[in-house]
Amino acid sequence: MLQLGKSLLAGIGLVPSVLGATLIASHFSGPVYTLSLTVTDSSGKLTQTSQATGCGNTPAWLELYSDTRKLYCFDENWNGAGVITEYSVASDGRLTSSGQVRTSGNTVHGSLYGGSDGRGFIASAQYSPSTITTYKMPLSNSKVLEQTKFALAARGPNSRQDVSHPHETRTDPTGKFMLVPDLGADVVRIFKIDATSGKLTACPAGQASPGDGPRHIVFWKSAADVQKAYTVNELGNSVSSWDVSYPSDPSGCLGLTRTQTLSTYAPGKKGGSTTKAAEVRVVGNFLYATNRADQTFGSQQDSIATYTIDATSGAIAWLEAANSYTYYPRTFQFNKDGTLVAVGGQTSSSVAIVARDTTTGRLGKLVASIQIGPKGRAGEEDGLSAVVWVE
Image (cartoon, rainbow, N blue to C red; front, side):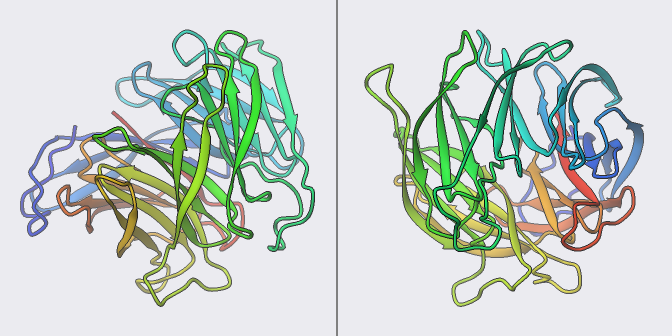
């Protein structure tokens, strides 16, 4: 754990809590990097400590399971077959490949689900093939369990909504349902999980507004067990709040009802023709979403939208825009105690560590940053793709 220097974080009310940290970042050119973060009383520093290969030509997403120290890397290769690679993470963050399966390519996300421990199968989303694909664990010698292809009844209002574009496979907090935000179809697809067989059964989808383009989803629950979900909508430059309902009948389906949609920009402002919302996170009663290519804080300095979550109802309200200290922040993740956020800038090909006030939820000073691999080109599938904490 990383100790935050008092003088470095003075003025935002943080209490030093850790001594050091390890992060892992992937790059669209192929490598997966291990990074070390250290902070003294006056400065922070990120250094690259090791580099791994084996996640194909275009690593796009990282999913880490800290309890087993297993990392899953998903290859987005647009030119034919790709791979999903499992790595074992050593105590110093070094990666050793421990399993792999070949895919049909263009995989943008994936996660584990089902089985007796929620780790029996792996589901992945393929953006342009309009499919989700599942495999039985372990990955080595695994074959496709199911592949489901989606079709549109009609094109959406955005030019990118020519076909279905599933962008994530995420289980709900109970582990009984799989949710798939579909950017092309303006829906959040819902599937009931058979934990024994790994089979997914389609349920009625949650309906987004036309042109929203939902990309990622997160969950939140109040102290009184009010369950909410929040999506970040790439095409609409917005976030949506959803009521989550669970069936009384065990054979029934989870339901989603959209209740709010707010811009990822302050009231009265909006994104430009090239801006795209990217990822969404919840920490306590605060919601965060990254904006790509808005340069709100100057040249190649994009923003992170911050919202409060009402502790009773789960309703969201705009708080502020914060500096991501990166260009094209495709990915971000908070550390466990919520004092720091690691932001992955795709086009800047950089990782920025930003301080967070745990009381106000506001993001603050830049603690450390590093460029890894070659920089990307604005709007292209190159540069840094993902970053995760190893905790």
